[in-house]
Image 1 (cartoon, rainbow, N blue to C red):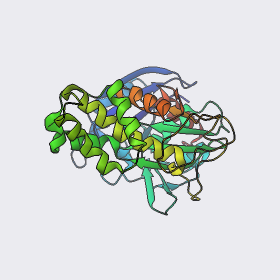
Image 2 (image 1 turned 135 degrees about the horizontal axis):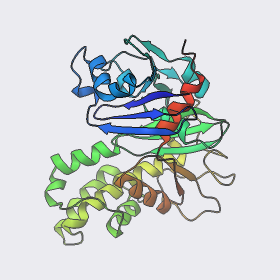
Image 3 (image 1 turned 45 degrees about the horizontal axis):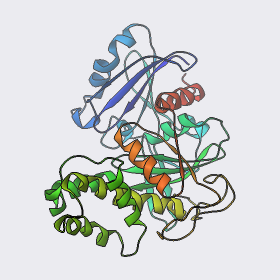
Length: 328
């Protein structure tokens, strides 16, 4: 399906010109996220972003991400999990726009094991775009300020959890006493591994966090390593929660069996140290940037295997959804 696809988030937007077979003919990225668009300014913003493509004959535009939120162009109501390609395509929302047919992909909602609501906008197209088969089972992690852990069963998103790890790291580094002892950025080296190891020990996250300061006070953690150690603590706690049953089912069940594991057993233990197992959870990492290396290292240290996902997952997911839409 030849069309324009736009992954339009809070702080940035990525636009793709897609060939009939879904191949990316052209792409562009900018800082024109929805927070930069004035009220009533979305038609003009879209024209500024891809107006030349529209003038060149493109007539279909598919949008995903926060552009479909209440703060965006038009709200596309959340679709409840489980949901796959057909459900997403069937729930797109039409948006009036002169000279082109524009549709918005809905976000998804789910509940965690305790019944607390979960939501996503934009990640759903990355998830469906990274699947190798339409009936695939998978455990997918999308690192970010609000990291998502998504369970896919039979090609449909069965549930997911959100972890504010990236935002917590930034807040702790920039606005607490911990940041005063830090220089440099987080890297997946020995200090990061030490933080991940500490996350598996008793005492809880809040206790572990203060250790970042005291280790520095007593000369056991260098200022240039403190950010890496803090990152290891936070990501380590997140990965442990996700691999021990926290990743997200609308039925409240733990992650057991084939969607997450290469064998038949589940990892058990609420944050206890994970020992080498006969089976390893396979986690598909979708995203880009420094967080990919950090999450890959943490998953490996927790006994899992991180497999890189398709770097063009968003474009591919939008293409797959576009093929199933009734555009007329």
